[in-house]
Amino acid sequence: MSRAASTDMDVKADKKPRATNCTWPLFTAISDVMMQAKKGRLEPEDLLSLPATDDVFVQSELLKKSWERTVRQFNRDQAAKKAEELANPEAAAKAAKKKKKKGEEVPSLTRALWPQVRGLWRVAFGLYLVSVGLAFLGPFLLGRTVQLLQTTQQCGLKEQQAAVELQDDGNLVSDDPISISDACRESSQIHLGYIYAAAMLGVKLCEAMLRSWHDHLMTRLALRARAAIIATIYR
Image 1 (cartoon, one colour):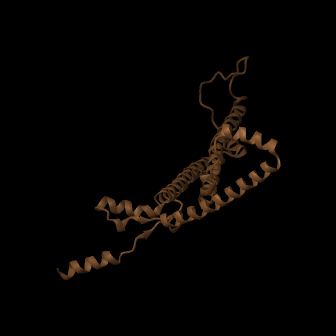
Image 2 (image 1 turned 60 degrees about the vertical axis):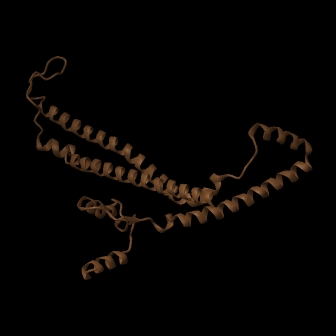
Image 3 (image 1 turned 180 degrees about the vertical axis):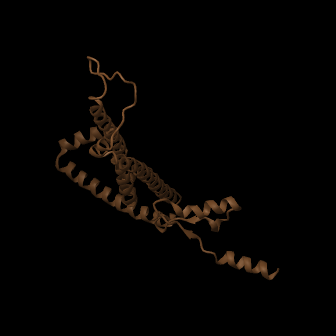
């Protein structure tokens, strides 16, 4: 084997997997991988590694501990119910009828999973709420822009009332476009239209980014739960 080939193998062997940089809001961590995929074939070491908190072993151990805690709590609740039934036979009979209709109670898997997914879920839900608020802010800014244009045109109409002949119903006879003077532009603050346009662009960009992060976190949440459940089943 040549020295060059040996050197290449050593470099590949020593190459550490790149961690997923989820702190960047625009997902720039994946840009290098996408550009490299255009140039050639990707190898396993070229891909981004999972965050340490999403490791299958870590999530499996968390679910194992949470499930054991949930089962202990369930057994304590069942023991307390039995003691209460022995103390009150009439209530026990009613409870037995309800139990036949509902079916046998079992420990809740949802309650066991909640501790390991609640952190990501709360952040994702918060991002979703903010994105919904921004979705309503866009039409509001558009309405302000239309109102600003309307105010400016009305000012121009008032200036032309003395020079243009009017019909009895108050409509303009002339078909010439309305000329807007500098005084009207200044009084109506027409320059705010540029600010509204920039704000609408910024709102849509932020809304899209927050929705993307919401989807990203919900996908991570689902993968955490799925990996933990599958590992628990195989255990």
